Image (cartoon, rainbow over all chains, first blue to last red; front, top):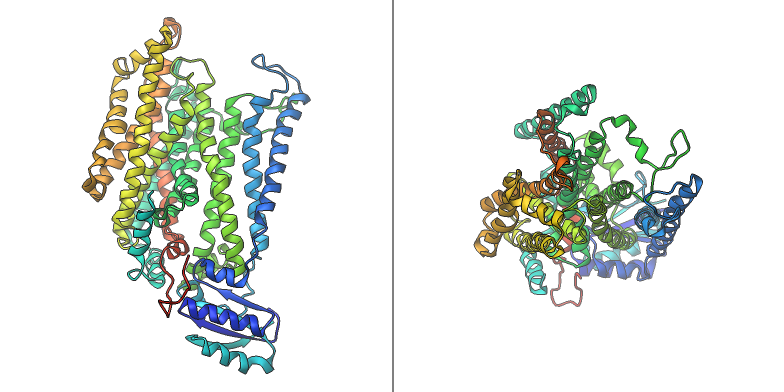
Length: 170
Length: 458
């Protein structure tokens, strides 16, 4: 998070937290919003763009489809042996392998895409995070320079925050 | 599921159950294990060690130690394999399919169902390895060329099964672990011991629940659900093709895939009930897992029981209509032949007994449901027994007919598998949140200061 300091607002109520987000948007370039669960209104208030994860999954699925069929076809051609009077390259029989790998690769790409986009694993660096945010509180954490601290603190307090704290940033 | 019920459920939670209560209730399950937990864990370990001992004995003295003999060469092990894969299925159904349908009754039960999926696939996966007799050659199933540079045969349903089950295991484990991440973060923030703090810090991957994480997480979760749904259908279809692709009477039927998929969901939901009831009692989860959830699961049981019953009847009808003497004889042999008890047991447990659940008070009678869920699982084991044993015992040539003598190795390994499954479940419920904290919170109305504000949770 950019800025030498972070101002952390702890909220019990969702509507207050949304006001806190507005303060963050108006006063800082870098802020983070935490929630104890997925709340669409809150996520949209921060970032209304769609996630690109679906594209990553699609690429994975296509790779899997090609890889599955390629595995079955190329291994068949590598040592041609006619089984059950079927063609050496028997596409209908290979659909299952292609299908399963489409899903497998799609899922693995989705997993890696999600980890990358969520910026995890990131075990140690949690600037401004408070354990209450995984329990029942919302958090708005605003990164700022020391001279902005008082102003942002006051504005956050006015939104109805239960508590406003100042912590070291960067 | 009607929208009214969903609304009722969401309303039922609001005002009564809070975010904090969900956190506290679920995380209290992870507190210091009790004496009873150790007893359960040790009994499970003892059971699977007994089963493992039987397996070692079989490895030393050979497959002759089992009841496997001509013509029933797919005996108890393949029955167990299909049974456990079936159990696994409803986990993904509850977590993925019901997620896509936005059925809110899934939230408090899906984690346990997913854990059941992963551990049941781990159990199922053992059986083909046990069945091959020389497990050290099990890697031959992998796409690795042998010493003569010959690859496995991708036209074989058995190899499709390897791909289907291994993909299923990988995807369902991924789905399970991804779902766990935010909840482990909650456990991390409340961990009381250093060991748990470190364990949860690592396994939560540093999850903080910020808006960017939720945005991508929810999008990814939806895709996982969308990928897992066709996977559920495909895996048990492929398992059914292990049978249906052959020409054995009683197996060579196009109804097999939907019949197997419905049966899998049927047995899996019953197993979820078997697991949820004691857990709810022990950890006092009555406010989170309510009658509503049991009622919804029972309706799913009624639906799948109906489908399974229809499939049984269709099999008989098709055998009669085919005018094929082998097929007709097979379906005479099932209810009246050597294994008739298994057939009638199956019919009672899967078709008749679940009909009682049409009576609403029984759908929320916990003791009755517990017994019913066990009856259904016995019935579903018998169903697989019926399919495998009767068809192999009576194929085309009377000279090739035969029976089966159960050995203590068969029985020991079958029971041992329950110990293996139970051990993982017991460990899981004490170390990781068995109820999805973050998702249960999703169905609770978010607290707002001004109830008239335009802010809504959903």
